[in-house]
Amino acid sequence: MLDFAIFAVTFVIILIGAVLYLYPSSRSASGVPGLNPTEEKDGNLPDIVNKGSLHEFLVGLHDEFGSVASFWFGRRPVVSLGAVDRLRQHINPNWTTDSFETMLKSLLGYQSGSGAGVTESMIRKKVYEGAINKTLENNFPLLLQLVEELVDKWASYPKSQHTPLCAHLLGLAMKAVTQLAMGSRFRDDAEVIRFRKNHEAIWSEIGKGYLDGSLEKSSSRKTHYESALAEMESVLKSVAKQSSGQGSSQSSFVNYLLQANLTERQVMEDGMVFTLAGCVITANLCIWAVHFLSVSEAVQERLYHELVEVLGEEPVTLEKIPQLRYCQQVLNETVRTAKLTPMAARLQEVEGKVDQHVIPKETLVIYALGVVLQDADTWSLPYRFNPDRFADESVMKSFSLLGFSGSQACPELRFAYTVAAVLLSTLVRRLRLHRVDGQVVEARYELVTTPKDDTWITVSKRN
Image (cartoon, rainbow, N blue to C red; front, side, top):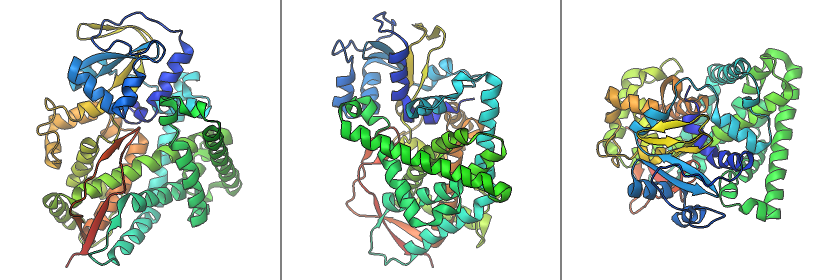
């Protein structure tokens, strides 16, 4: 399973922290070409900070040293892989551990699946994936309703009005994830607003505060983070307790976990993982997809014709989504062009080898996905938004290897793809999307790639 490949990115820094905690400092060289430490204590951390992000640092590292390169995080050596062929040598399709779950739960102070047996971990994982699938199946009309409400709102705007994508689509993602995960309680906008406030407080520190150590140095930030986390945990426990008393009448994610005989504590932990990651990935996939369509009229019109051919004037259904092949290509190209998750990570459990380079046991190995997704040796004209490239089977194989599609994609990403497909199938059939002249959209390469500032479009009704 390669579930870690997309979402481990969001918690790579937590894994680094675990390495530093679990293993004493070591100066043994890996033999991989790369940078020497800038500082004895911090390694190359000052270089990462100066570049602005770990992704931008990795771009420069691989430009200088090639597709297999090393640097230092503190006193620990790190190896980064920046090409599909190198990743193919390192990825083991038989891995069953979920790095996303392990790292996120480590940050949150939960017991990760790594402490359980393989069978128990796999059962828990199947329960989690099954709960997401059942939630989508049984709440699809609600998801469609939320999307239609947003599209109705946009359709009421005059063509000259600028529509803020980040604000509106993050709101859609928050409503969809909270209502599907935790039930009717979150049809109250006040509950969603409270959730959003706490979510932002937690997510803003996952990565940033742990990458530069600033969270531990600021008592006020740490108190704010811990308070938000405690409040979210309390809400999830309350939802689990309420759902447990209502039996099987509810069709929320939390209730499906309870039906699988998970404890309320386990339900709370899995609910935290899904709500934290689900909101951010879903929102940004939708934001970037709508943005790219607004600047590519030809792609937008081709998608419109597919939607009309497959759906006619009927609302999209869960069963029809797999038939929207070009829509799937648009979403794949959105993930690639935006570099939606620019890195992933795994701890080297046993000594390994990539090309002639030996990777010692307990070395942190980073998959520089943002570098790979823009590699001209893998993608023709890599900086061009071109969904047609995904009609090529070899391209899809490379994309799947990275964990972005098919059965290897993690359940949170499949959830995000479903929400995005519903949004595009509803939006593009009703409205034309237009770019705002003079707008320059720049990316912020954090744990998930987001626009630096809110991104704007205008819309007009189709005849």
